[in-house]
Image (cartoon, rainbow, N blue to C red; front, side):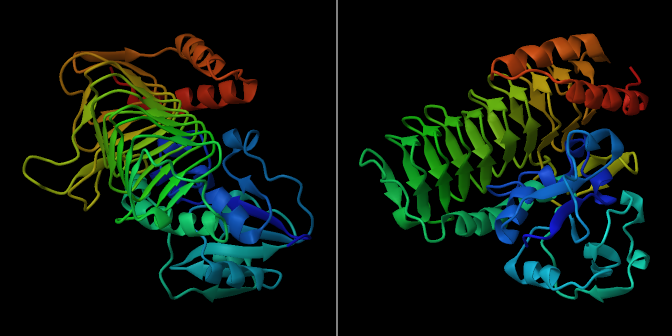
Amino acid sequence: MSNTTIILFDDKRREHLLPLTFTRPVADIRIGILTIKEKWEQVMETSCGYLTVDYLSKKFTTGSAGSNILLINGGVIPSSELANQIKNLELNSALTHKGAVIAARTASIPALEAILPQLFTSCIEIEEPLFQVERPWDIFSKNGIALEKDFELITKGRKSAPISKTNQVIRPERVFIEHGATVECAILNASTGPIYIAKDAEIMEGSIVRGPFSLGEHSALKMGAKIYGPTTIGPHSKVGGEVNNSVIFGFSNKAHDGFLGNSVLGEWCNLGADTNNSNLKNNYAPVKLWDYPTERFANTGLQFCGLIMGDHSKCGINTMFNTGTVVGVSANIFGSGFPRNFIPSFSWGGAHGFEVYTMPKVLQTVKIVLSRRGLELEQVDIDILAHIFEVTQKYRKF
């Protein structure tokens, strides 16, 4: 693949994956251990670029491209079989699935909206089911499968660091600890799925973990944490309390007691102590979740569905989120009672009412949060937040 440029492109599913894709291309979503982009880079053994909407393209670039380009749909999870089909594509040919372009080989980068079957001289329809991320709830509901696949991909042919004898371990052959990670006086049960602990991560004393589970680099499980159901915690995150079948992208904290279940948190989020979310309706009915393109609540078909929170959003201590709540980007939620099930981006308040969380206040907070990680807020990120503020204004009818 040395002469081939691989670019992961967004399609119409990006709109259905909001608010998580307000701040990233679809391929930058974490599911399993890795992001979708990182999975393709592992399978194709080369780096990948992004082809996304204009306001994100300055940060998420295509990279340098030659005249041999493989376009791959950023919402598709790779398999070795699919990767081989893509590698064998001829120039100006494409793989499609149910009318959507999955991959194509071109001599130049087309406009994003032009990536349609009719653009190519030949199309091969894939009949077998594909592993795809199309809606926010796919991220947690398909996380178990993704964790298993990533565990195999990352650990194949490698040996785990030794597991300390202070731990109680079930199925140790399904536990992989990278060198530099610290795990002491914990219970690790890999009988229900693999457990992966990344470099410089820490599981503190008294934590109970049932796989499948992944803990990212420089992340920590606080003392007495209870983790079960296929759960992913990305890099630079702190997690405590009870977590079930959830995905935390990274750089986010749920550091204290409280329940998080069947949920997805973006980056730079913070849940105050004793924050709880409901993941099951009292009448056991299927959960509905806010869908941005239709501007109405969509039926997930799931009995268990909790919280979807966009980047930079935060909530105060003892916050309660109702079943199937969607929180946009840079929302700040606090106070007693259940806030509404759809909280627009740049909202400030709670069940007692909301007002606009103005850009100057947002940027002030973001700068402080980033500085704690030794990072600076760059102009490209300011521009992205400013764009999101404008396009989400119609939802803030306070």
